[in-house]
Length: 528
Image 1 (cartoon, one colour):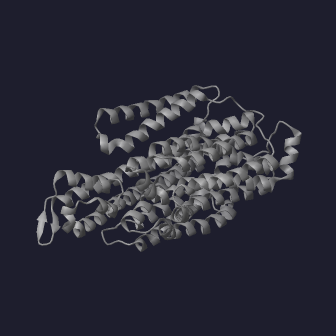
Image 2 (cartoon, rainbow, N blue to C red):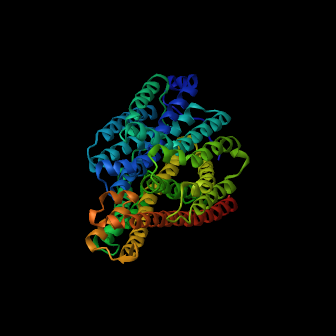
Image 3 (tube, rainbow, N blue to C red):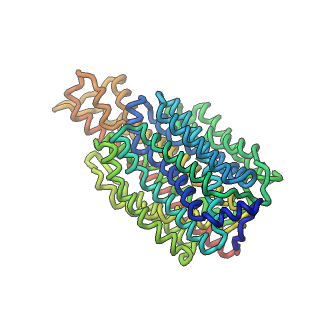
C-alpha cells in the first residue's frame, strides 16, 4: 500500500515541519538512541548492581524487564494519544518523565527501588516510542526522502542496541553503575530543548480515543506471565502461585484479543496483525529481541563474574557484535528496497540463530574468544533486522495509522525482550543449579572426594544460579579453603553450562521463528 502524505491540524505546524525536517530527525534519533541504549546498557552494569545492591538473579531480571514491560504494555496507547493530542507534545512529556526517572534510578538505594523507578522510566520510554516514527513520517512527506529518513532512524536503533554494552562498560568502570542512568539527564534536557525549538506539532485527522481497557488487559496478560517465568525456579513450576499467574496471563491475553476484535476504537488492529506478511515482521522483531538481545545480559554476567573482566573489558569483548550491527545496518537501510522483506526477514533472523548456535559449547576452560564468531554473525543479523522491521512496518498502512503499525512492531520487540529475559533467566538458573548440585555432591579436594554439607552447598548453588560466577569464592568459609581450586573449577563449569543452555535455547527459538517467518512471508505473497 502506498503511504500518503501526513495530515496535520494546523497549517503553521505543517510549515514548521517542512522548514526543519532534519532537526526533527536528529531530535527523534537522540530520543531513540537513549531508549534503545537503556535496554542494553544495563547488561554491563548488572554485575556491579548485583554486588552494590545485593540483588538476586530475579532482581537483576527485573532491572531489565521493569523497563521493557511498561514499554510493551503502553506503547500502542501512547501512539494513539500522540495521534490525538499531538506527537510533539507527547514526545516532550515522555522525555521529561524518562529524564527524571533516569535521575531517580541513579539515586536508588536498593534493587526494589531501582526496579520501581525503572518502571517509571519505561512509561516515559513508551510515550517516546509511540510517537517517534510518526514524527519522522510527518517531517518527510515525500516518499523517497521519508524512506531515507526512516533508514537513518532504523540504523540509529541498531547502533544504540549494539553499542549498549561498550558504553555501559566504560561508564561503570570509570564512574560506577549509577552513571549509566545519570548520562541520560543532560542528553534528555538537550532533546527537550531541541523538540521545543524545532519539532512541529502533528496529529492525525482521524485520531481515535485511547483504548484503556485494552491497555489494562494487555498489562494483565504480560505482568503475571513474566513474574511466573522469573520466579518459577524458586516457587516451583507446579506451585499454585505459578499456575495461577500463568492462568491469569493466558485468560487476560485471550480477553485482550476478544476485546480488540469487538472494540469500536481498538488500540491494536488485530486484523492487520494477523495478516501473514505483517505477522512475519512482528514475529521477526520479537524473536530477535527475545533471543540475542536477551542473551547478551547473561553473556555480560559471564564475562564479568566468571571470566573476571571488568565492565569496560566486557564491553570491549562485545565489540564483535557491536561493530557487526553498526556495519550492516546502514547498507541494509539504503538497499532494503532492492531486497524484498520476504527474503531479508527470514535470512536475517536465521543469521541470529546461527550466531547463537556458534556461541554454544562453552565449558570451564572457555574464554571470551569462543563467542567472537557467533557475535559477528548474530550481530549482523540483528542490525539488519532492526532496520528492516522499522521500514517494513509503514508499508502496510497510510499515515493516519502509522503510529499503530509501527507501535505494533515495537510492542512485539518489547514483548520479545520481556519474555526472553524472563525465560532465558529461568533456563540459566535451572541449568547452573543442576550442574552445581551434581558437582558439590562429589567435590574433589586433593586425593579425596568431599560431600559439601547441605547449608554450604545450597549457598554456593544459589550464588551460582544468580550468575555470581567466581564471586561465590569471596563467601567460602575458611574451613573450606582447601576446596577453593575445586570450587573455582565448579563455578566456571556450572556458569558455562548455564550460558550454554541460554545460547542453545535462544538458537532453537530463533531458528524455529525464522522458519515460521519464511512461511508467513510466502503465504502473504500468495494472498496478495
